[in-house]
Image (tube, rainbow, N blue to C red; front, side, top):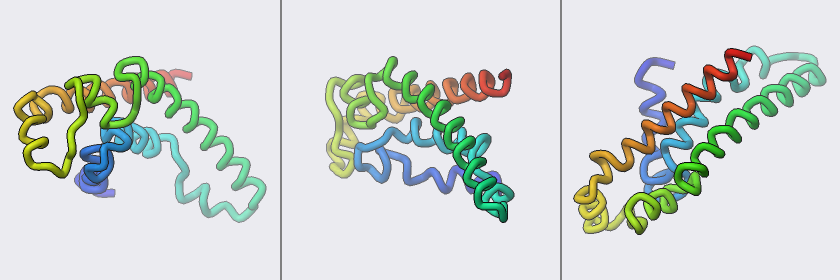
Length: 138
């Protein structure tokens, strides 16, 4: 993957996955980062022994599950949710229709893309970094 490919691939995470208000882009980006380091790889996918391959998949998925659980717990402790609309409600007192131009302007007026959402993404990056360092220290 080229340097810009991950950023390009993550474009759809904005606005809670395609402006739907669903899973927070900072959260899903964090899951993606954990997967890049600890997820399945082509070598594992190509193991010819099915039992060995499935054992390895279960091991990887168990590890990933624990890492994602740790990230989820941090999001819920800080924001009460991993859902974009819920996080907006906590930060702004309401959520926004990501397709409504007036709502988008209001969110921006209130600091949505200046400090509020960037702080969520910054927290996600910090938490993922901490989780990675904890995992690598085991």
